[in-house]
Length: 191
Image 1 (cartoon, rainbow, N blue to C red):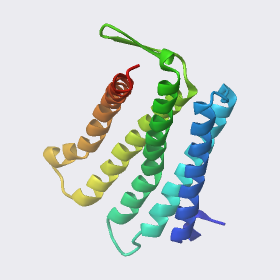
Image 2: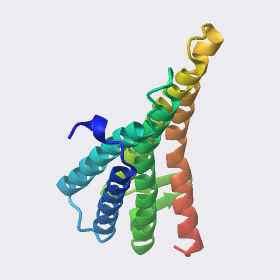
Image 3: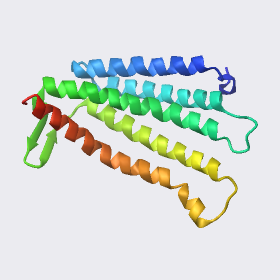
């Protein structure tokens, strides 16, 4: 079946449910420490592949064949690709937080420094959030390009880079915010 025929919202729903089931399995196995490196890579590849297919399917569903600059198709592709990755990262943060509460020795605060033991959940969070935010930034660039259209000029051309710059800034900041949240949870629990 060609990707051009994927114009049904039901395909998008099934792909999102597949991502959700896979990330919940990944998080549950990571929380209970039954996850090895090969499984973590496998789950990440499955989630990434489903997110790519979801981006293609949602973009095709929202695609407007009559428009010269297809804003809706770009928006659908961006949301379909970046949405499952970012949501997967956020779900894994919940699992990682519960794992750290269960095993507080995995995160050690020494003065201003934070020492973290190796965790496949943390690797999944990092990769999903990074790729999701980057895909959102690149997708937003295409939306801005579609909105700008044929207009020329350095100022208009530079507006295309704003979403990518914001995405890169968010990539550099979310880790700090996540670990502040983890430390806050540990302090609140008295750990």
